[in-house]
Image 1 (cartoon, rainbow, N blue to C red):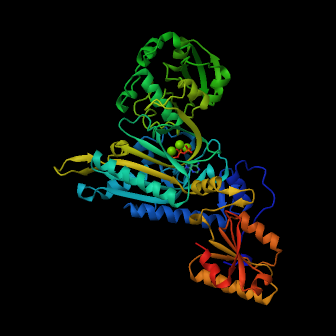
Image 2 (image 1 turned 180 degrees about the vertical axis):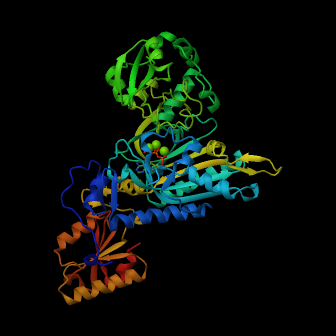
Image 3 (image 1 turned 90 degrees about the vertical axis):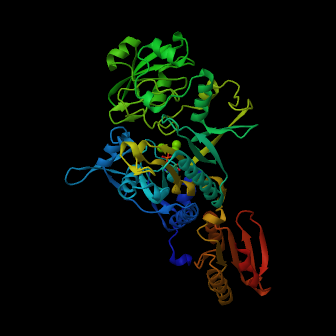
Length: 561
Ligand code: ATP
Ligand code: MG
Ligand code: MG
Ligand code: MG
């Protein structure tokens, strides 16, 4: 590629709206342009990097036996009504109507569509297992889109879905994806950690998140300094809370039925003294009154509740008043504050894995995903819940770091196959629901995370695998014949070697060219100048170390990896 004929609109100024380094650098390097909040155009350089991430993802998915397809981004409401998600997905689901007034949505995820495909064509155990994936844009109307591609509203995701005939098979499919994900993040040159994540209220399921460790991450990672335990904050709280109370986790069938309606019943259910439930408040979420009881393990005041529940506190009320206002409590929360997700008309309150109240069967207590649906307030709450930061497995000490969730794998079980009647015939000729898993990688988020981990004061330092160009050839002058001739020759050699070079053929000062090459993060710069040519040499500069070496012209191409 010739710089003069390419399009890299670099910026000198740091745009004011950008808070994190990846956002700043992507804007400055001319990789992305904002169109609306959380919605970006990928400019040529940005697109090149995204394609690199996709290449890695495709290769690893194909190697793991997954098969690529592509599903539409616009989906009909009917499918979402079948799975039961139309009513409780909430405002992240962008709902639209067509000219015939039919309901559609812009897909935030594709479980419904893939389940519909598989139930249409796969009817025998002989065709199982199967794992289908796509790389497709998603739309989620995030409450707080920010940090550029890190939390966009429109973003690119690789999503895969596995279908198995039994639990053992599903576990194997899950394991394969676990390994494939490790391969993806390694190949992208990222430092990451796999953490246990909470799978919410679906009994028997499990889940892992892949976290890129970075200070600017929005997630907390809890790891033990003495054993291999590692979990996200929510899971760590769940596990510890579970351990402390000694209660068994509830399977999904049970949680849809209110277990406890009075304060005494809640207390008995949770195995705690009733007087510990000290405060009760009526909270208004989206014009709907929701009664929430807050367990008084730690200080809960009105400001905190407002913050946690992202809602307006109407008043502090007695339990009786709440029950009257809401026709019975919807749920109870604690010991740490959690944000209450609103699914359509319904709100959910749950305590860690104990979902003790719900006002409709099989709506909002199914597929609750901590971390996705609930946001814990902060690390202090975790510390309050776990005095001494003691590991739940070995008694070692927890270390808390911040991370960016770049991947998430999830054993779904029969949630979608059961509700959408997706079945196959087993060896005995009996109908059985598919056992499913789903697996996501944030493709655009991976690109941003790579910058969070690899940059310096001059700009991006791409890991070789994601670099848009492996090398830039920089003639110090475009007016001197010998310099131009040699630069062109080196450029051609690199091109023929498949090393994706950029030739900075612009008539600019050397300083400008160097700054741009450093800003956009090209791993190797080959500088062609009159003086070094007189000695038959060029300069090779490695972006990461900043080290420059004089190398004979004939050898320089071999310095590029
Ligand atoms: P988060 O907790 O960050 O909101 P999520 O748990 O809602 O993410 P999943 O439903 O697990 O996301 O989707 C799979 C992957 O898609 C995530 O692991 C993440 O890498 C990516 N992703 C999710 N939301 C966004 C977003 N708004 N912008 C960019 N990437 C995203
Ligand atoms: Mg999440
Ligand atoms: Mg989310
Ligand atoms: Mg997730």
